[in-house]
Amino acid sequence: MSVGMNELKLNEVGRLKRVALRRPEQAMLSQAKIDAEWKPLNYHTRPDFEVAIAEHKRLVEIIQGVGAEVIYLPAQESLTMDSLYVRDAATLCAKGVILCNMGKPARAAEPGVHGEHFRKAGIPVAGAITGEGKVEGGDIIWLDQRHVGIARGYRTNAEGIRQFKEIVGPDVHVEVAVLPHYKGPFDVFHLMSIISPLDEKLQLVYSPLMPVTFREWLLDHGHQLVEVPEEEFASMGCNVLAIAPREVVMVKGNPETQRRMEAAGCKVHVIDADAISVPGEGGPTCLTRPLIRA
Image 1 (cartoon, helix red, strand yellow):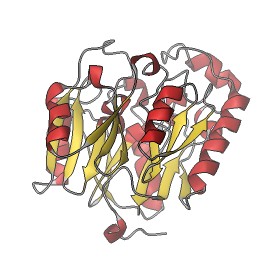
Image 2 (cartoon, rainbow, N blue to C red; image 1 turned 90 degrees about the horizontal axis):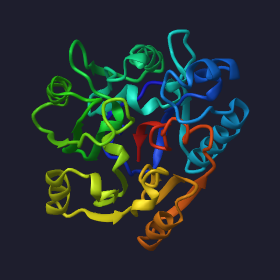
Image 3 (cartoon, one colour; image 1 turned 180 degrees about the horizontal axis):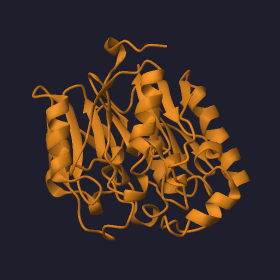
């Protein structure tokens, strides 16, 4: 089914209409593959394959509950189980999908697999980050049609940002957020580790790790911030997926963050994610690549 680009609204909070995921069956494949890969890929713990299947199925049910069409990305021999986190291999612009160029070398094959599948599904591919440029999708947040935030960190570099700006064009303001060193180059740390949009001009943030200039830029543009408490940052309290305005999915174990979002008027779905999120630090945003929002 071809997608008319007049349908594409560039934000992170509209009601999901079309979204890409990859099932554990196509990413992890088997318990044997998990056992071989989880340590080399720097996972904290060993995921359980059968538990991952059940947890992922529940996430999909919640997403489909708002009327979204789910596209399942395929398995491919060159992919690791990191390919479960589909957000990072592609991002969007007004002209279609932008294929990323992964900062984590083990994930280098993912954008090409995504691009081939998107083209077959009739989804336009507007361009790709190539050469020395590195960009991962978790470092990009569309705030509205004309404003996008992108991180400069260990997964997205200056050349990648230059190429991204060239693809999106001069009519889009690209606000660069320079990330702190935090745990270093081998950690999973993206812009979306510290900010998740909840609604237009409403952001869930972990301020202690936010770049000062980016935080000030949000406030100067009228954004309100819901703060994640320090004790819930490591448990992915800030990794929250909006499936509709002020309707979100979060990982269990973050009750105070949940309470604060509910106080801001959000409906919150809490998922078990001991196999699909906790071991690889990939929450609901990481597990999904939204393609069309209302």
